[in-house]
Length: 525
Image 1 (tube, rainbow, N blue to C red):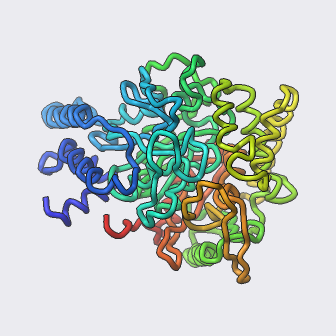
Image 2 (cartoon, rainbow, N blue to C red; image 1 turned 90 degrees about the horizontal axis):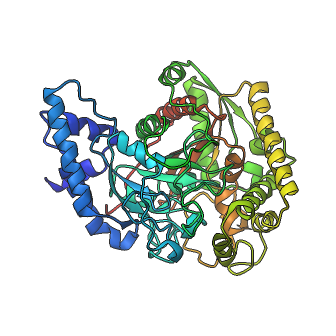
């Protein structure tokens, strides 16, 4: 295969790859595609550390079996191929993969090999996907950069001295560098949204309780039930892709009844599966009413703000969006006095759930991160302070924190109803672009529209917009918005009400078309 053709295949959409694999007169097979991606991993992964564990022999065996089934389907129309049949994907190393190492980049789990796939991994397999390998992440998925105790630091393919984002950063780097077709990640405060933005990708985080969350590590397998969701009320699976259409493909695969023999039932997940009729109806909607906030309380990186303002103008001009400029939309929708109160609420609930449900070894690990101590950085962050406070909540205080969250969720629905909104549009990160590696979690500079440079805490730089949406259980889609002056990707985020993923994806596709939003591969890959 010529180099140009090779690159074209590597960066093709999952939809196109699946179509070509199943087409009788096409030369592309799942085995050839797996070999292509392994070749690119060998060429590029040493500098990225994006893919951290794989079993080439097993993967090739599964690809050959996928090709055998394809050939059989040409003779037997009764054989139904899944929407991702034969397509190689990576899995964040916090998701259990049966018979394959699952470390969550922690030395506490360096030898952990689960017996079964996590339900969301099993659903991807049922859709025909081939698991190529595991993608890198920070230890126990606990940062917006990829630093852990098992694997080397993960780097951004657009600038190796910068983070790919976190915690699903290794997967984002792999997808952006053309090492796989898509990545299965997870998010509790922005862990899919931030890497997608920092690596110029499309990303989707499902709303709270829409997709099965079992099989996620943390907690570590230390005598507790391995993989049981340790933080029940905010985490969710998500995916990172190069094309918005692939988000739809992944949603169709993941929002389905369980597809594995997991020993527990995730009773916190509502059995609301993918609704094709709802998606089709949303696609046909003549105009979507959206609130756009480009300033988020006044501290947004200047290029990000201007790119978003330009997108809002394109939406208005197109006529298929009714655009409401809405400063401070997060606080208004949540019924909060300002954005500054939302991050501590998220941090408190996160810390409280760790204390209530996590094994003692995991709590000890969290303290080593500096989350509950000043081991990495002083308590100069409301987020770190609130996580510490929540970690010492009583059961009564925990119940009050849950009630506060329910109030915020009711406010969101009331705000959408009162303003007849379909979605809100806002930046992914107030810092705009991927920051340089920051192992000490020092404050980071943000240049704002009035010419000032504002110093913000390491966490707030990335999660000011994403964490409040996770707190409210809101589904989100991230799209590539443009590039900074330094050529670094900038993302935009769309959010809708819970259980409206079908409408959200239709809006994302419309916005992608109107704004001419697209993934552009990093130079040199």
